[in-house]
Amino acid sequence: MGYACLIFDPIGQGERLQYVKEDLTPRFGAGVTEHLIAGNQQFLVGEFLGMWRAWDGIRALDYLATRPEVDPQQIGVTGNSGGGTMTTWLCGVEQRWSMAAPSCFVTTFRRNMENELPADTEQCPPRALALGLDHDDFLAALAPKPIIILGKERDYFDARGVEEAHARLSRLYQLLDAPDNIAVFIGPTTHGYTQENREAMYRWFNGVTKVSDATEEPPLTIEEDEVLWCTPKGQVAELGARTVFQFTRDKSQQLAAARGAVSGDALTRAMTDVLKLPERSGAPDYRILRYLSSRRYPLPQAVAYAVETEPGIQALVYRLYQESWVSRPPRTGPRALLYVAHLSSDAELREEPLVRDVLQAEPDTPLFTCDVRGIGESRPETCGVNTFHSRYGSDYFYAIHSLMLDRPYLGQKTHDVLGVLDWLTALGHTDVHLVAKGWGALAGTFAAVLHPSVRQVTLKNALTAYGDVAESEEYAWPLAALLPDVLAHFDLPDCYRALEAKQLRIMEPWDAMAR
Image 1: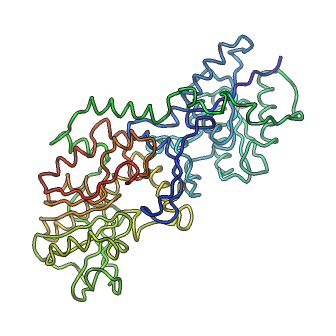
Image 2: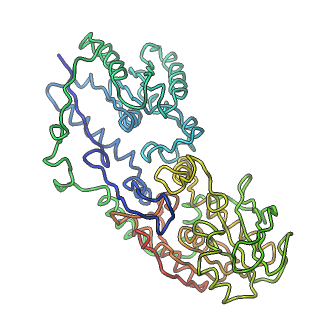
Image 3: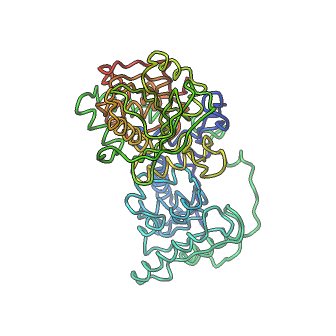
């Protein structure tokens, strides 16, 4: 008797891969050339791509169990990288596997984070860190069935984490009187399901099933791609299969019909809950950082202030002056302008016509600008130098980890704007004209709805609606701009209606593709 082997591509992978390539540099700066979009879009409707892929694996198992040549008591699961990811999640959610061998994925979330590794969307389950889960916890759900963890010494999935996961599981298997049912193998080479790891898997599965005593891989015939295609041209979409986008679009429309218009206290409660906003207590403390000169700003002088919106986190605020100023902002009366930057206060003070327009309209009103965390002067170099816009850059890294911590990155940025508004209120500015652009218009919109000191709102390049993103096959908004499960509770047009009472003006709104 030999092995029956089922190889499948989960949704959004292999024959079902969906992504968009476009040069987005003119709108977002150098480095924006490719966005993998299948997984992030689903967050808006409360879905997670890893869940969909795990469901594909479960259905593949259902099919395999119907085959007459298959012993349902002897079905193993293995895969490498993304397949190792699915093997790990499938161990956590399906008990019919009799053995497992995840390869080149299992490590620890801590090692990934400390090593600045921005893993794929489906490798970062929402709320996982908030719930105290780690990779080994998903494998523990299959205990005491036989599992071997396969790693690589030179992989970016840290071998130290592989050993730490194995050590934790070994203690569990010892308590379950099955210490020989957990093992680890770390091959000497780089990321991939190379021969040494495959042979470790063969030995493990053979030891469990007793099907064969072979320990080495025989010579292989490498098939042409076309031979392995399951469809005439290698794409299931050509057979009329529904795509990720179609599922997401349909759910968005269903949620919109069930939700209806949201307003008043119901809207503010929904916003607070979805953004996961923490409590605020009074005016935040701040530091006077430096005197800014020769910046070609609309006014000749400026000072930078670091407003501490939560412990260890500062929003960078510039205040423009006609004359030299090196101390705290003066109290000049209730009116103030607050500009929430798209990408950089420094650049936009020099280049954005909107800033000069609002200042010319109110020349005697003090102008403040705000860089929320991760923007402008606080833009990190995590994941490499100048990677902010890249598919696996710092902006994505912090956004995906924020979702695992159950604190959406956009909610944190909104909290920064609210903290700056508290600071302005403490300075006597209780009549704030909030102006915001692009990505900053999202946090600016939410803060303007929630904060009583905002009396007037001007938005440029604000997103038309999250529903537009969810219902579009291509979109250009980053994960940091998306809110998980938002469309079950409200959408941006609800916020814009609420802001009509605050003299809302929207200029040049952007659609899903930021056009």
